Image (cartoon, rainbow, N blue to C red):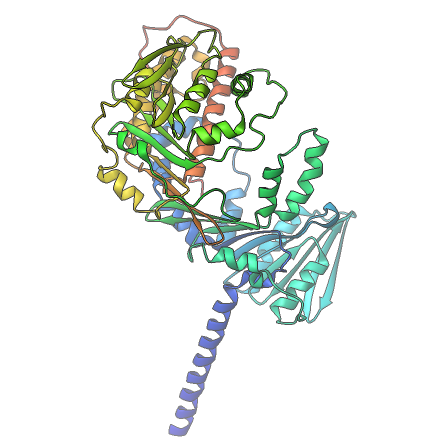
Length: 599
């Protein structure tokens, strides 16, 4: 009996050891998705852990804004008008129940303009459960009609199932706890060869390629999602397209595009904030110099934006182009034409100014709108003043520029321009800097020898703590105080929206401005966005941290402005001017009913 018990114990120990070894090997295997793909892979998008990423998203600052009761109450009515969920949420929940990890999709080839895609994910439950989920989706995507041809192909003990509809092929296979699918049968077979460690000496994987390995060194080890891109084949295909449009690229721009060897980016979460890291493998552009950040000393408690970056004047700066019909492109072209008319060339810009552009945005409490100013360091004061003279020869909205001297600087300004957002454009040039901005007073202060209280922003704990979250920058640095910006914008825009909805009821048909969440409900979840860019050995590394990343904020702001413009335009078309109904007070906020989470 004792011998039998000893045998059982030994068997259990051996089985446990085998299980541990298999799990270790599996873990190692899961970490090498790039080794399953060919070296020629052009694009790879990888998400290592779906459930973990979802959990981190639900703990993020931006998600907490979504869950605020006042935000839910405000969105309840407009969300109710949207098409009801047709199973998308149920499909997502069923997919997450599979415990999916290492999900990926890759573009492995673009020969003859025919993209070859391959993707897959690892799952935890028994393969039967994953198969049931996949087959349900296939039944929805490929109805059982005579057009869909189905067959099973046996390849090296793997059963590959294919569905062919006309020229399209969907091939998929299960391998232990992996599911793989592709629109190219040969690509899927090659992937299975790598899974089984069955490949030739010349079959180099993406994970072994120099470009991918180099990019990986600059990216964090933990992230929610990653994307890798080899842009060179796309650049080659871009040139004929550009030629067909009648446009052209300067030789230096074309050379810079061709020098980009790879682009990689990761997105993840860091204590509730989003963190994005980008890497672009390319030679250094310009000189290796640290950012001086001279204008940072003038930024204070009301500064919501500070940006410092290196600029490089493109070769086609003064190239003639078709005049734009209107808007900012037309103004820029007029300014370039004015410089050309005064005999200015590209070399004059390079000799007159340094390469560091700084932008400061201020929004004092008592100001209706913010002010923006941009500065360049002056290397050649005489050239800089000639350039300023040329630029101010162009009238702004029919108004001519006036010139005066103040504290050793030449100041050019125009009369304040009326409108929804009043502007008072000005340009000032001194022996040290050239400054242009939307407010004459702030421009004069920037170049005045009577300095304002120095370093107000730089000395603040909020700025210092935010700047510590990213490495020191030598190519670009951006800081946005999202809370200050939101509070100022809310104070400026909310009364206008309430007034507009009163005079134009159609504007409040879909979104009731009276139910806007209190500013504090949103502002308390906001923190600064900070971004830094530096050059490391073989490429540029950009890191951004905040409630959203700097790139997301830029795209989101552009979309918000565009969407608001369209909404207001459509609202004015639907409803004409009406007298305000002063007898009835503005509706109060309704009791919130929880709205389904977006994820």
